[in-house]
Amino acid sequence: MSEHDSGTPAPKAARPNKIAMRQKARSLAVQALYSWQLAGQSINEIEAQFRVDNDFSDVDGAYFREILHGVPRLKQELDAAFAPCLDRPVAELDPVELAILRLSTYELLNRADVPYRVVINEGIELAKVYGATDGHKFVNGVLDKLAPRLRGAEVRNKRS
Image (tube, rainbow, N blue to C red; front, top):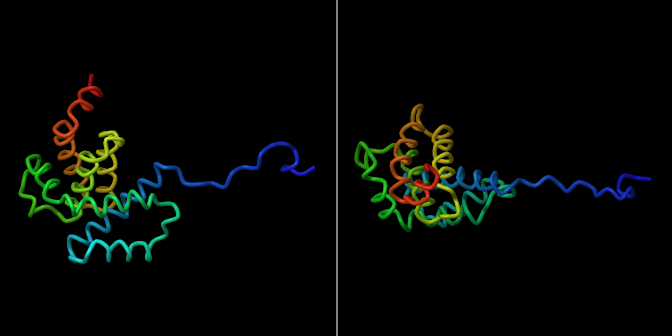
């Protein structure tokens, strides 16, 4: 009798979980936003290029698209939201840290389904991978100041 005939269900093919798929979407989105900031290409061109150059089978493609199109659309609002938390003008930020702060601020403002602690942790991890040596400390400091401003009730509930 084969395993399949034994009544025991065959294991499902391993699929990436939603968390990992979102992490990969954020990672690709930071790279795409960085490219947008530096190259000045249209978002549609950048998205098409990233979808051709990367395997999206284990990426939350809809989340990638939302971030990639949402950040440029709301750029002024996002920059204005985190600017008071900076120790320098937005124009002087490292482009990688700027892309991460914009992505994270977008999530804090527009994705209430993503807990603020997740937004902060994901921003830190992205900065560790793509940023300068201590870039993650800078991103952490800015997001720690920003979260209570944008998600005050959620932050207060978690801290009490």
